[in-house]
Length: 246
Image (cartoon, rainbow, N blue to C red; front, side):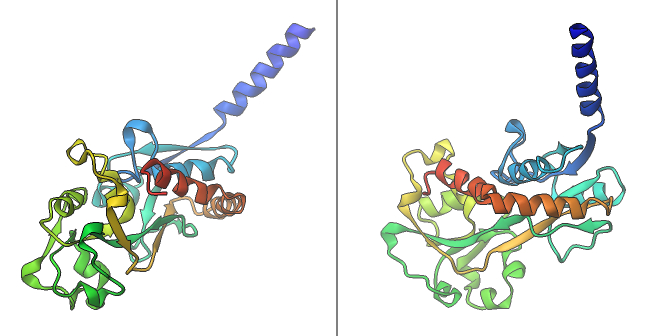
């Protein structure tokens, strides 16, 4: 009888696992938000933590996708969801509450002792930023830039190297991408403490989008639990500590 009971329990457990519904999610390609080799990253960890509060659903990631490819896969129904969608992007299905958070900052070498308290203070500085930054931050940013002293790059990780080698005075961009770039072997001996971080820009949040409109409500409920438990902020703090920022 005991043996039969074990068999029944095993069958119930296996049925429960088999009934979990895979949700295929189109993910990005920028570290440390998406780290395919480790099946992790800040945004990946946020999604995984949220789904842990959604029994019966299992995220299945497609990493390494550019923004254009992600949107295309979502639009034609090759994936069930897309991560990191801005409110300005048109997409069918439903959108979740704000999930992913970016912190764009101006970064200077501590030894330069530059004081940046507003975007106006960027005037007259040699600046490197990410491709499309002018349009992203708008006129309030771009009007203070000098055409011959301002550069944009497709490779955001290269901004740290430009600042370290004193080819620019200021790097404008995402905090975590900068910290991650400091891990490059080329930057050995360089520490986050060697720089000053100037919060000149408001934080920006993005969302998930699901094709199945019935999924947004349970996802939002799960996300609310994640925030209430404190785990949401712990994920961000974990990465800051990993990069010796805190």
